[in-house]
Image (cartoon, rainbow, N blue to C red):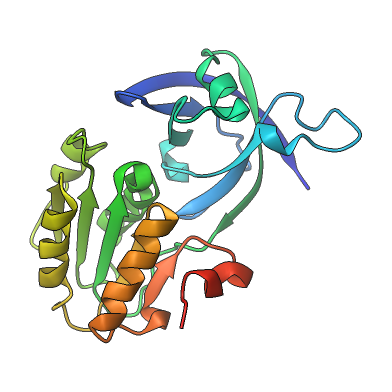
Length: 234
């Protein structure tokens, strides 16, 4: 397993309690849109056994051609030791990146894509949108729907500038408003749905999509195959 010890090049406060950490990008490192990775605090692997409390699974919110690795997260966000320590890191400090993978790459099969996310889950969707804008081959349209009760919509200004006839954003500050838009976009014929958010959010959206006869195979979530039955409960 390859581990990269990378310097933090910049830290951006996206909203209250939400930060993006930009890491240096190794020349040989690449990934696809929607990729995830493991982030470890320096020292997590120095004992007889790795300290799992110092490691988190996170989405990469940038594309390789941006020449930087971006991680957006709530900090401290919880009382977890990892988030507390992460919140105290500064530019020039190092963190460890390993185990890159992707379960959220664009499906280029001549079908519309609808992205449904909650809060900071838009960080997973951001590179998917940028990859679509750069190359729309075999994807007729993309709709992005994000709900955030704080109304501090991360990346809103950036993503709204990309809007065109085939790409549209909806930003909602209430679950009721989100459900109303969901009822509209579900009418999109033969769409594929990308769902990102809390476990409760994901399970709720899956049930609502199923109720509208959306097939499980057309619902994409960033979870390991072995735990998918926990979300697609029959």
